[in-house]
Length: 458
Ligand code: F6P
View 1 (cartoon, rainbow, N blue to C red):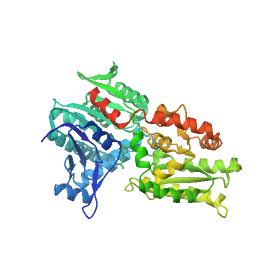
View 2 (cartoon, rainbow, N blue to C red):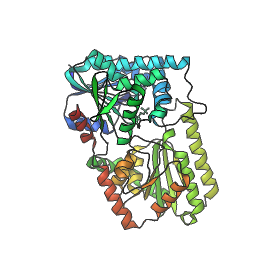
View 3 (cartoon, rainbow, N blue to C red):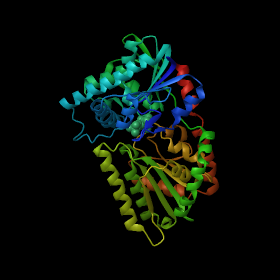
View 4 (cartoon, protein in one colour):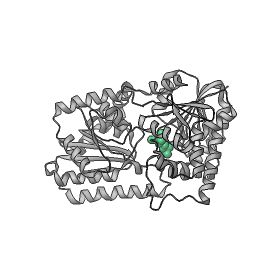
């Protein structure tokens, strides 16, 4: 049976364990889908050998099509192109004195990426009913909209980028043919969406400067087609999150977080350990806070949850090492009997994260760049007494939360330390009032609205 709504993303809503057990992923998209009531099919990639075995054995649950893409193609498409190239471009992460350097190997990797995106397009063409809406997610699948349109011109195709978009002068460091492929790939969609007007504007400028396309009427016109360029910020579903945040597994974690913190203030950060999350500078800012504002010594505990991410990439493994090193240095410099300034936790524990967000006095979200950043939105919603938010101005979330957060330049460690100080010393009533306004802003665009607006735009 074909579906009237089809989603495509690299990481799907389920994964398989080595023993064949199914794990269901949470996340905004899954819950948003549940609220539409639409008959949706989700096309995703098998990400591990266990997934590939399950995909081959037809074990994916109803409504999920998991693509068994051969591991070499997957590795080149996911690690080399999507994560090491396109992610680095959109987050401006290259150390350009030495990287990137595109040679023969990059051409092979690009061919693999193209084949991988085409496998998605082929599957989507099979799964979509006549005239169906297809929503393609993220930088892993930037060629898929055009590849799908060539197969199925009857479809309404949307593409959404959850990342920032690079300005043209940075985007152009991609080889010309690749830059053109990425842009024309996305322009195969009827509508492309971004979390922030800043990213939408950067995309439009890339189309104008790299392709010579026209940007007018809220969209790009290129080679006889028009693609609308839209902004759909994603927020959180307040009721659902508060319900999840008071479930038994979270309640069970509250005591251990309270025990760690004692009667001190809790300064919290929660990130996947990605280079763009800027965890090292965040810890350096905390060190500067303790050096310059000694009144916080022994009066604050910094819980830093830095969960594993993309460990196949050496840069990520090295970055995890750097995070651990700085945390150790801060503890060596300041620890006293009965007070450990930083507790760094690298083992993923969602219930503990929610418990910590309920109790935090200040949350630090200081990415170098971020498409949106949902931790910044979840923390005020879950906070029991009100939370101060130190937020990078380079996160998409700054558009929605900027009025009541303490905005920082993520490269400015001293400014971040000062913002931490200001947040820790804000009067409790003022902090609670700001936190309530942050929670209102954070829940203004729940996933259901994010999804329905995109479908309406198609
Ligand atoms: O956070 C941005 C994002 O692009 C998500 O949209 C996407 O699910 C994720 O990063 C990809 O991460 P991973 O490589 O772990 O699947």
